[in-house]
Image (tube, rainbow over all chains, first blue to last red; front, side, top):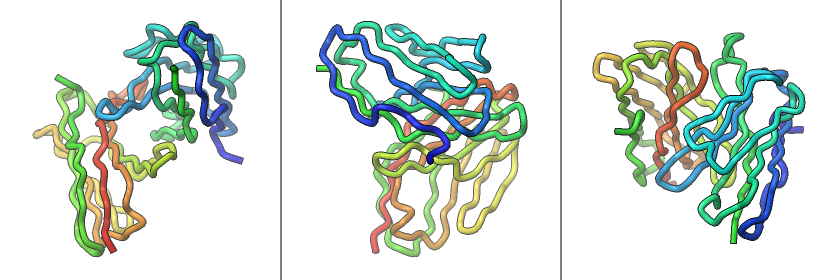
Length: 114
Length: 111
């Protein structure tokens, strides 16, 4: 099994619908992140969490919300999807505080809003 | 000005060539520097990381950081078709709270 699992892998949804992207990890890392990737814009941070009670906004949090249900689970919600939220979404984990400096990424969720 | 600038390419080289990938950055407080490789339809995977200035070598890959010029590089020796991917640079403040990514450089190694 992958260290960081994202579901679904692909999703097409309609404008105005609520949608949740889920992420679970088996790395035991405390830090979890949600990024979106767009051509020409690279990876941009949406939200991050350092433990279950810690949630922080990234540079592009408007229109998104998150929930850290457990150390291993971090979900991203789009309350009312709009077409410019069409992108590739990645969940990542990190154990930076323990000397594991890199991110471990999931395989991504390709979201299309029509 | 973006925190991290990276030439998107695309870059196309023959097998066996030496590849040089580069990023510049604006925040002199960045301390951790990383390179990720991303294959099509996959998540980025960490290739190398460097703390502060200097060089680091791992097999065919060498990462260099020049903090005085705010410039980092990744060199790939004896490039292989399997190296064809998008390469992303990333960097972080000492806290490591978040990483700032370049937009990625697309590399194709032609057999």
